[in-house]
Image (cartoon, rainbow, N blue to C red; front, side, top):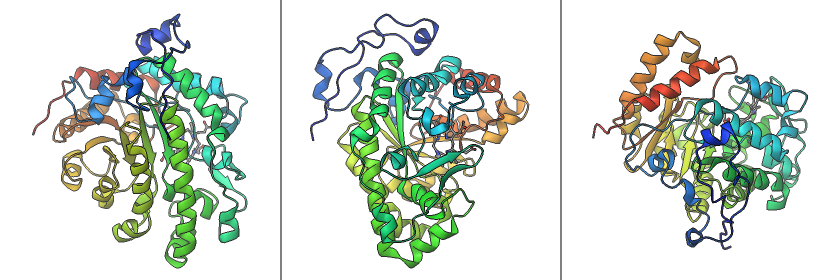
Length: 388
Ligand code: CP3
């Protein structure tokens, strides 16, 4: 399938400028341009610090964004979301656009991440899945056998037209600031579908993986197809990078990861390679899996807070950028503690070929946004430099 990127607003303006007053050219779609010869790539962001760091090119300071930067820690998010169910908000292009831009305006982070959720493509593919406030994704009739797997049809791009529309609006608005598209990894999606609700260890999912390998393969195969389509839709609409959140992959051993999870994640990164955008691969508690996460094929490996970056460097084969990894709970401590710990992360990040500053997992809802603002400024004020 040819990748056609429709082009974005010709206006060159920073996200901050966009925040202060709408650029008159924002939202206008430019006609075909020369960069369409690199299919699917949003070339307007190619020289941004975030994309450069993903590609392990030099930057003056480490780019920074935060997982869950758009969310309950922001009063403007709570106001925008008031009275609207999570998945309804995720289906509304205007709300998606507004919420995605909120942290970019407030903090001047180096990338936006699409406001959505990992279960959005599953619902769009016909599953009766919901997100309960304060709980997370729930599926009343969990997937346990082949008939259940058959309920999961493929995803057609038209099923998520609201996402394409939001991404187009966002890339026009963001100008040179990259938009990160994302999806859940097949393993993490399976966790919610098989256990039916959030859990610490997803025992039913692991037992199905061990005890019913054919069923597991057919479920993960379908989830892989859905994920590829969902990511391709976002890239085709203008997303400059993608992140695969295989958040719960850390609950399996390296052997089982290699046998039952990695082949599916690898298929996703292989399918995405022709799209020409950098890919990030992240999971929580993946210290023992970092090398394998890298092998799956992304350009950037996300590291949680448990493994120092100068150690992660030795666990991931050369040729990858690292992203992370300040413990989100540190942001609840007084600023001098945050400053010291963030400086340590930046220092250790210098041992990597390239470092994108982030938290080790998502922003906690009780985080003070002013701390995130100061942290962003600190990262930007710290010169990058490889210790290699
Ligand atoms: O990072 C961002 O700013 C983009 C938005 C984003 C959301 N979910 C919005 C959201 C992203 C990247 C996700 C991914 C996601 N969703 C993951 C992978 C990342 C991770 O945290 O490991 C997972 C496991 C989910 C599933 C999910 N959705 C959970 C566990 C929850 C939390 C339930 C709760 O209320 O505590 C959600 C809901 C959710 N997704 C919220 C947001 C902002 C909170 C809902 C609300 O505001 O009411």
